Length: 304
Ligand code: DON
Image (cartoon, rainbow, N blue to C red; front, side, top):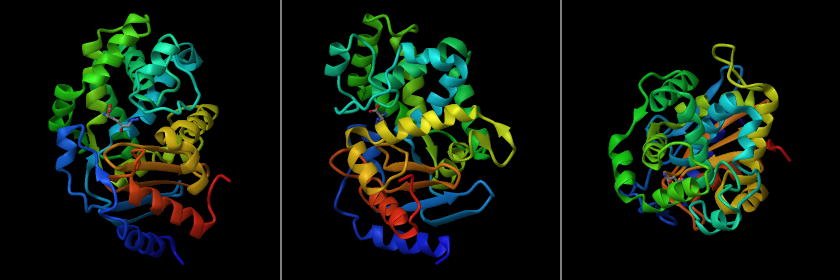
């Protein structure tokens, strides 16, 4: 079966799970999203692109943004970044405060909120207009100048994100935040509020399947060894504290977001983005995870 037909078949099947999960509502603006959406898009380094369902509808990428800010921070700081952040799965909720206290202000990994705040801080220390630079970076990666921050989502999280504010102040108290917590939080809430479609996200993540090079322009985004490392981190920490179950079922490096999107990558082969807003108990898209599982089972393509 060709990939296009396979995506359509999987979309139909995964849609059967709609109604079984819950849309994230701790960010009030996200609760307004239509729960019945389902989209899927796949891109290959040779330029092939296939999609099914609502693949062109923009959604809030939320924590998927952490892959791209990590890429920028590694460009800026290289391996020095790891003096401030760990590289181990957290085994606890992405917004947990307890572990940060126990580990003296060094977040377990760059994909939990505390780690992502440090990453955003690193970028803010180096780049003037970090928000603008991130947007430019993302537009370049996906080749779509029309993508933007969803201000309503950013403001919604700004006014309710007390736990992230606590994490930022906590990091600062340990000396692991160089900029004012308010500045870092503003940048962080905006990166999470980027609105992109499955096609945009799959295109943006394609360098991770192509040794760090953006296939559309030939531009090197990041050295090949760094690409391997980002993919490794996605594998072990990209899907909250159910990364083990996700690896067992799907077998691809991936990063999810509470907007219901998941970016998954098979190095050398493809990047794949799926979006369905209803989440499972651990905060990953319910139908999205199932769709990725069906894809790797039916194609036999996974890292394992
Ligand atoms: O900070 C938050 O809670 C959201 N903006 C993003 C959470 C998310 O997608 C999962 N994080 N790892």
